[in-house]
Image (tube, rainbow, N blue to C red; front, side, top):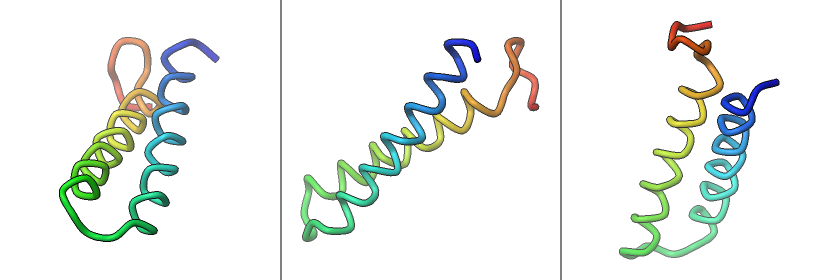
Length: 58
């Protein structure tokens, strides 16, 4: 595994943990910001892990 795949996996795990944290919190600005950050982390992780070194889909 190269470092790009490791970053992708780390982002996917971090995004998943943040989603679980957000669901246990009440509503509010902080919750919405965390939900947005979790969504971006999941998208970034999927992009980093799901593409090859030259950016083509795997």
